[in-house]
Image (tube, rainbow, N blue to C red; front, side, top):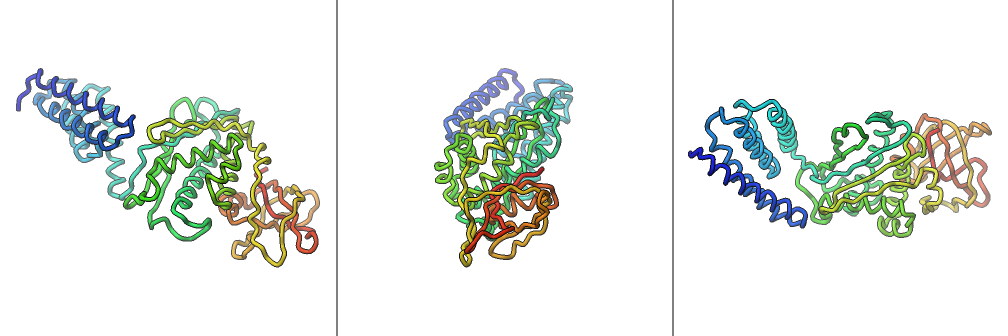
Length: 382
């Protein structure tokens, strides 16, 4: 095999031209051409790298191997990428190039593990940036971050379930697949959380449009909520239970005005960067009118008379038609029975069991107002 520098340089330049074409195709959302062009770039760069026989030709040898391995990674040829990195490390790469090769090798190893587990990760990323009085130089109380990530996870999960035509609360699985949400390492000097969706098994996206559809629907929901377009949001979600669940979870993600004063959500959807800067504070969600989800039963209904209670959330019965919790009101000492919609019970209410909470609810009535029974409309931890 020749090691003529002119031939190697020519191959490398051709490879970079095809890589540029692949990036242009990606911007134009032409995945077929992007993949074709990236494959050509990889083959040319690999050919150039393998032409260098001498390990003394550094850093050129390791740079070309790193470039070829990176292109193999982008083509999802992880075994070839691993081999190219190993071949580069077997030489004598400079320290900086060696560090880059090791970082790339970790990424390759992770993808190989995902392949072994039959898990596909989205190339798209969903980001959440937090700013506030409790956040400084990339540090924040862990609960402020993990709490919001857990709520985002539920929003993604419910978006997928609804898009697959499942009723809220149904025990049916989504095409017997397992969806997961992955969090990337936090960016230094900030609190940018990067999330990726993963799915194990074959990709059941024939009726969903892929990861772009999921990210796009979630971003649209947050955008409509943030702009106060509640009727359009309800039409967009098109199911009262999923709608109420989304609003309740979004409220817990929103800024509290003190510890977290800004929540910025972002995603790359179909090649376009979309962002929503949540300006609606948690306390401003009272103007979001939610439909009553109380199942009819012997004339039992909620009336537009609101009460606010404080106390420890106790006892739950999710087996009955009307899901219930108990709360001993700190002010009056009365024990209250509080009906909870199924859309709110598991994702919103259950995490607060045993905690001191404030509950806003509607009075319940049959023929007359019941003295110590409410229908829950809001809950927050004290």
